[in-house]
Length: 271
Image 1 (cartoon, helix red, strand yellow):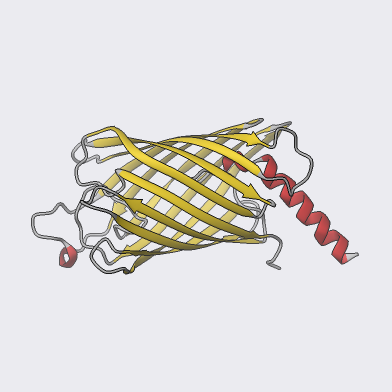
Image 2 (tube, rainbow, N blue to C red; image 1 turned 180 degrees about the vertical axis):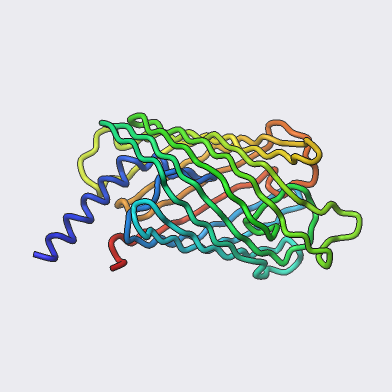
């Protein structure tokens, strides 16, 4: 009996994941959470081409879905951006869903998120990035609307970098605060007709990623197209690229950056 219940739970979870897979954005987080009592493991590689030359960062990550409203990520950051490949810092991210409105083939979600990060990197730029480059705090809101095969999401966040004069490079700016915002769209291309949770999913994404330095008024806006494959409702593969469409914020690391990610999910493993 227990075995049948576990199988049924997996099928239901798989169907849920397939139906809403177009919300699994590549460069941003949706307002929806991962399934309750589940664990996810990610490995992400980012390559940047304008630093000058090529540098890369690897981000191993563990995600935990405590319940339908609360989840958490723990990340580590490793890169060769300052010479040899090394561990440069880590981050904790939490997201709490406080609005959930469901209808047939559509829903609306609203969540609040927070992040705390640490980094050993010296300060080079005012483009505050709490995923490897800066130590600091961030908080914000996410709103996601699913409309059948199309999912739209908007994020608004505010980050504060911790001041550390010992790591500040002479003549380089010390970042303080940064306003971030994004608009993301995802479309489910395959399957055309859903039959079971083992069907592969193929999603396409286009995301607009922007930041503004409230002190100087300088800003930028990136375009980030991406594709995604989901296998057996448990394994996810992402491939995306972001590039600057407009802006005047100098010294950015993520201006021309590819991202490739593999994610593995384990459902109903937490008691």
